Length: 224
Figure 1 (tube, rainbow, N blue to C red):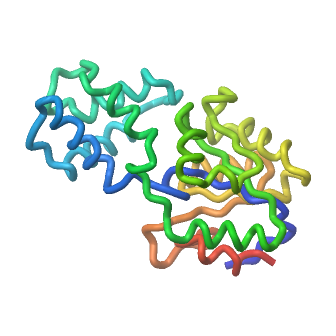
Figure 2: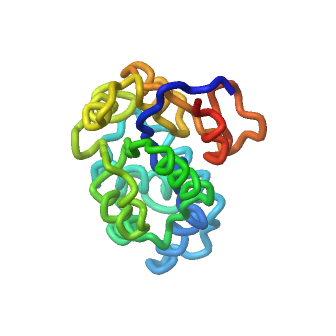
């Protein structure tokens, strides 16, 4: 891994980088659907359907209506296509609770290491109004001086605007900010176009490509 120089601030993506749904999206969907008469649904199949629905979207503004459409597509094999699921509101609120999220084990050690090095910390996330309260409940928000949420500013990664807004709030130039996330397009390409440095976090790879890491535990070795 090539060393990263002059890093004075680090921003993180959230979903897939700091935390993910637990035990899975499908488990949460199946549990709540069962309360409304949709019984016998396999969590693994629902997770696959969710991933398919997520990947099929052409644009996504992280509004409640946009999430309702994704949920409807996830359950289209089990209900009338295009119909908003009767339990959508309950599902939406459930994902605002800490019990359905798992913070990865490497997150806090990486945060503590960066703080010890005097590095400023921030978040740059495509998310909605549920994120700030969720971060407080998970006791993560206190670590980040800068928190930029797409729905709040009206721009979404990979737009340069969201990264410029983060860099503006730090006490260093954009070139001194490192962004870490799990999406090549949204995180790495978006950050670099805005003048930030970037690392791809590929948790699924045992041998990450150059410019990538498989765990935040590798981060310290990347910093000059």
